[in-house]
Length: 399
Image (tube, rainbow, N blue to C red; front, top):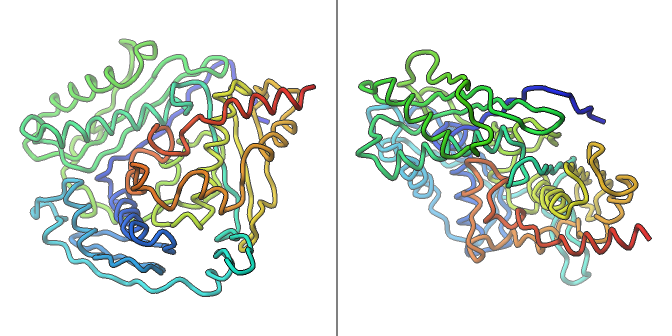
């Protein structure tokens, strides 16, 4: 059990959609979206690499959809903003290599429902998955990571929506926010670090002023104060960036993708994987469960762990940890409630969260691939629609 310190500082980072690893995540997830659009039963495990004027798309994909892999990759890069061939990576000049083959039949046989025998769909891999929620922010997310996401996302929005004003901003950037806690609750922001790729003619003061204005807009006023320390492009300049400055790979920003280092992480990456892969779908389900438990007032903070064996439908374990903030007699009671209210078999997770039909429900997997998979309301695992069921089950178990 974690102890609550009287006072401490916790730091989380985010990276922009133009970060080389995030470019790869978005390409991989855009390919997943394209496969699922016409074939919801597609099996996708897509990995992308980017470096100087090169994109390599590889993996195991079985789909009936007709997908133009190269066009998808170039369109994603264009949308991010890499359109200038002089900076070493551009949607129009880069080479695109395709190295894709079909999913292994050994894996497929364990994760496909048998309509003739009604055999349940098994998990696409073994492993453990975690979900987390806390009532310290409106999004029920840890403050450091949600503040980091919001700053870098707003800078990207301004860069793309007002290019004539912010012409000095280029796509690659990172944010880092340190938050001071008192008695387990966020008290104030201590430090904000921003490293943002820029043109050679940028004036440092322009970026400094912009970052401070954005931080004041996106971080709630009660956490802001005049003594915040800002470190903005602390090395002096950041002109060479993106895949030209650093090779990118799918799945290298798993802490950025989740809770910024708060709670636990199972180790599996998300992007480029269809929902039969439980390291993605079960992690989404665990967030859904944890968020609903906190929203229902059954705990101030909640972490859910599940574990699976490849080809087996039922999770081999479920653990609930409220960090001693649970409102029931013990967390074992919450575990029983979770088993009653939520279907944690892979097919049940997919049905509950509608993971095979994202476009029909106004979201996309590519949309998850920058600024965090958790904390944005339009994703189905962010809905708090199980509050009444959880409260009713809790009342029943307490009788």
